[in-house]
Amino acid sequence: MPAPTQPVNPPAVHGKGGVLCVSTTRAGTVAPVALITEWSLDRTSDKVETTALGDTTKTYVKGLDNAQGTFTGQFDSTDDTLFEAAESGDGCQIEIWPDGASEACFKGPAWLDVSIKGGVSAAVTIDGNFSANGSWTRTPWGAVGP
Image (cartoon, rainbow, N blue to C red; front, top):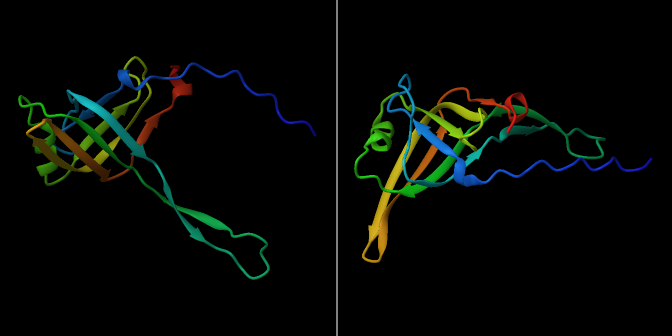
Protein backbone atom coordinates (compact mmCIF):
# COMPACT_ATOMS: atom_id res chain seq x y z
CA MET A 1 0.00 0.00 0.00
CA PRO A 2 1.51 3.39 -0.96
CA ALA A 3 1.92 6.24 1.51
CA PRO A 4 -0.86 8.84 1.60
CA THR A 5 -0.43 11.97 -0.50
CA GLN A 6 1.15 14.84 1.41
CA PRO A 7 -1.42 17.64 1.91
CA VAL A 8 -0.73 21.16 0.72
CA ASN A 9 0.71 23.00 3.72
CA PRO A 10 -1.38 25.97 4.87
CA PRO A 11 0.34 29.27 5.63
CA ALA A 12 2.12 29.37 8.98
CA VAL A 13 0.95 31.73 11.72
CA HIS A 14 3.41 34.24 13.16
CA GLY A 15 3.28 34.76 16.93
CA LYS A 16 3.43 38.55 16.68
CA GLY A 17 -0.35 38.77 16.18
CA GLY A 18 -1.27 36.83 19.31
CA VAL A 19 -3.28 38.25 22.19
CA LEU A 20 -3.38 37.17 25.85
CA CYS A 21 -6.41 38.32 27.86
CA VAL A 22 -6.95 38.05 31.63
CA SER A 23 -9.74 38.92 34.07
CA THR A 24 -9.16 39.89 37.69
CA THR A 25 -11.72 37.36 39.04
CA ARG A 26 -13.17 34.06 37.85
CA ALA A 27 -16.46 35.75 36.86
CA GLY A 28 -14.80 38.90 35.55
CA THR A 29 -14.53 40.20 32.00
CA VAL A 30 -11.23 39.56 30.25
CA ALA A 31 -9.11 42.37 28.84
CA PRO A 32 -5.98 42.21 26.66
CA VAL A 33 -2.69 42.39 28.56
CA ALA A 34 -0.15 44.82 27.08
CA LEU A 35 3.53 44.12 26.46
CA ILE A 36 3.32 40.29 26.43
CA THR A 37 6.23 38.90 24.41
CA GLU A 38 5.75 35.14 24.66
CA TRP A 39 3.24 32.57 25.87
CA SER A 40 2.81 28.78 26.05
CA LEU A 41 -0.15 26.48 26.65
CA ASP A 42 0.09 22.79 27.54
CA ARG A 43 -3.10 20.76 26.95
CA THR A 44 -1.87 17.33 28.07
CA SER A 45 -4.04 14.70 29.73
CA ASP A 46 -3.40 12.00 32.32
CA LYS A 47 -2.73 8.51 31.00
CA VAL A 48 -3.06 5.49 33.27
CA GLU A 49 -1.24 2.32 32.34
CA THR A 50 -3.50 -0.72 31.84
CA THR A 51 -0.95 -3.24 30.54
CA ALA A 52 -1.83 -6.83 31.39
CA LEU A 53 0.02 -10.14 31.23
CA GLY A 54 0.29 -11.31 27.64
CA ASP A 55 0.12 -7.82 26.05
CA THR A 56 2.82 -7.19 23.46
CA THR A 57 3.00 -3.43 24.11
CA LYS A 58 2.00 -1.20 26.99
CA THR A 59 -1.60 0.03 26.94
CA TYR A 60 -3.16 3.10 28.55
CA VAL A 61 -6.51 4.75 29.20
CA LYS A 62 -6.99 8.48 29.09
CA GLY A 63 -7.72 10.31 32.33
CA LEU A 64 -8.42 13.97 32.98
CA ASP A 65 -7.47 16.79 30.62
CA ASN A 66 -5.18 19.56 31.82
CA ALA A 67 -4.51 23.15 30.85
CA GLN A 68 -1.48 25.03 32.12
CA GLY A 69 1.01 27.43 30.67
CA THR A 70 3.30 30.39 30.97
CA PHE A 71 3.78 33.88 29.61
CA THR A 72 6.47 36.54 29.68
CA GLY A 73 6.43 40.24 28.97
CA GLN A 74 7.59 43.72 29.80
CA PHE A 75 6.27 45.24 33.03
CA ASP A 76 3.36 47.65 32.46
CA SER A 77 3.49 50.16 35.31
CA THR A 78 0.03 51.50 34.37
CA ASP A 79 -1.92 48.23 34.76
CA ASP A 80 -2.33 46.05 37.88
CA THR A 81 -4.57 43.44 36.18
CA LEU A 82 -2.06 40.58 36.38
CA PHE A 83 -1.32 41.16 40.06
CA GLU A 84 -5.03 41.50 40.91
CA ALA A 85 -5.76 38.26 39.02
CA ALA A 86 -2.96 36.47 40.90
CA GLU A 87 -4.36 37.71 44.23
CA SER A 88 -7.96 36.73 43.40
CA GLY A 89 -9.48 34.24 45.84
CA ASP A 90 -11.49 32.49 43.10
CA GLY A 91 -8.97 32.66 40.25
CA CYS A 92 -9.34 34.42 36.92
CA GLN A 93 -10.26 33.83 33.29
CA ILE A 94 -7.55 33.54 30.63
CA GLU A 95 -7.97 33.68 26.87
CA ILE A 96 -5.15 33.00 24.42
CA TRP A 97 -5.61 34.06 20.80
CA PRO A 98 -2.72 32.65 18.71
CA ASP A 99 -3.65 35.12 15.95
CA GLY A 100 -5.68 38.20 16.90
CA ALA A 101 -7.06 38.37 13.35
CA SER A 102 -8.78 34.98 13.81
CA GLU A 103 -11.69 33.84 15.96
CA ALA A 104 -9.70 30.79 17.12
CA CYS A 105 -8.79 30.83 20.81
CA PHE A 106 -8.20 28.79 23.96
CA LYS A 107 -9.93 29.92 27.13
CA GLY A 108 -10.91 28.92 30.63
CA PRO A 109 -10.72 29.63 34.34
CA ALA A 110 -7.27 29.55 35.90
CA TRP A 111 -5.13 30.04 38.94
CA LEU A 112 -2.43 32.60 38.12
CA ASP A 113 1.00 33.21 39.61
CA VAL A 114 2.99 36.27 38.56
CA SER A 115 6.58 37.27 39.25
CA ILE A 116 8.44 40.46 38.45
CA LYS A 117 12.16 41.02 38.00
CA GLY A 118 14.59 43.71 36.94
CA GLY A 119 18.22 44.68 37.23
CA VAL A 120 20.88 47.28 36.64
CA SER A 121 21.28 46.28 33.01
CA ALA A 122 17.80 44.91 32.30
CA ALA A 123 14.27 46.11 31.70
CA VAL A 124 11.69 45.16 34.31
CA THR A 125 9.84 42.06 33.13
CA ILE A 126 7.00 39.87 34.32
CA ASP A 127 6.57 36.10 34.17
CA GLY A 128 3.29 34.30 34.68
CA ASN A 129 2.33 30.68 35.27
CA PHE A 130 -1.25 29.45 35.17
CA SER A 131 -3.09 26.20 35.89
CA ALA A 132 -6.68 25.24 35.07
CA ASN A 133 -9.33 26.12 37.64
CA GLY A 134 -12.15 24.41 35.71
CA SER A 135 -12.87 23.26 32.16
CA TRP A 136 -11.10 24.89 29.23
CA THR A 137 -12.51 25.20 25.72
CA ARG A 138 -11.16 26.12 22.33
CA THR A 139 -12.56 27.51 19.14
CA PRO A 140 -10.76 25.44 16.49
CA TRP A 141 -9.03 26.96 13.49
CA GLY A 142 -11.03 24.81 11.10
CA ALA A 143 -14.32 26.11 12.51
CA VAL A 144 -13.60 29.74 11.69
CA GLY A 145 -10.63 29.70 9.33
CA PRO A 146 -7.26 31.38 9.84
